[in-house]
Each structure stands twice: as structure tokens, then as C-alpha cells.
Image (cartoon, rainbow, N blue to C red; front, side, top):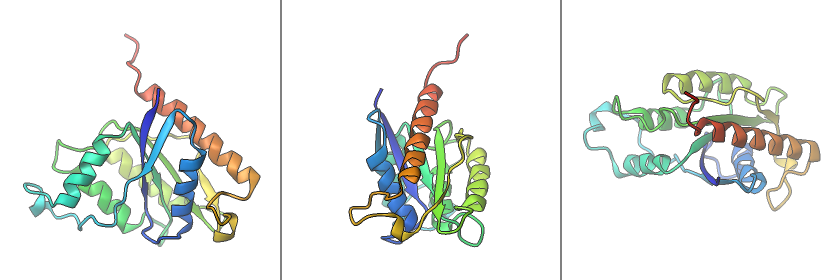
Length: 187
């Protein structure tokens, strides 16, 4: 089963550690997964007044989410929480009421920072938000990755073998879990 997984990166910076991590996820993914970064930087600020006739960027974003079997959120931590751009993307996909593109879609949460806590506060806040929009989320293993720019080579690959193995293991676990999420429950 080849599953299509969208990646949302909570950093807009071109060379951020989390964007580099997202690109590494694509390279390290099992052959059963097809990963693609879905850009969120062009989304306007959520405004309920726009729900009846959403801007084209919002429509295109929602259509891209609809074409996925699951989502991986790659989040940095800003002021001990989720970046506003990522929260805005979640809000855009959750509305209008009753038409959320998130509901029931499996999610994985991973993030990196140069510090030892690897975006743990942002990830915890993000998990609460995802529960509110009815996204089942991989609980274990949690993925707080300590990374800095020097942890990547010029091609964007992770240099540290143990971190590479951890990311591969996390991806395999996410893949197996999200595939089970798509199976019908036993009667």
C-alpha cells in the first residue's frame, strides 16, 4: 500500500532546521510512503468572513490535504508553543464547521531544535490542537529531535547515524500505525 503523506512545516524560513528535517523525512521514508511538503506560507490569516467564498490559496490548500492519507507536522517551537503560521493552516483546514479536512486523518508530530528539548512544548500544544480537530495522532515514539544546521551535509542529508536511524525508525512506526488507521475495524 503506497500512502500519500503531506508534510506541513511550521517554519517559513528557507533553510530552517525543521524544513531541513522535513526534506530529510522525504529522503528517508519507507518505499510504502510518498511524502510531499505542502506549503503554508501563502495562506491568508484565517477570517470567518471568508468562509463562504474562501481565497484560492485556501481552496488549493484544502484540496491538497484532501488528496493525502495522512499528515506529518514538522514544528519548531516559538515562545514555547506552535508557530502562528502552523496554527493558521490548521484553522484554515478546520473550517467551515462540519467541513474539516482534518477529521479522522492520521497525523504524526515531529520537530527539531538546537536545544535538548527539541520542540517538546510546541509538540504538546500541537497535539492538543490536533485532538480538537479530530486528528488521531501517533503517540509513541515521541520525536523531539536535537538538530542544528551543522547536522546536515551539503546535500541536506543527516550526518549523524544515530539521528538518521531514529528518524527512519520513527517514519517506519508512523507508516505502520497510519496504515492500521485506514483498515476497517473488526465487527
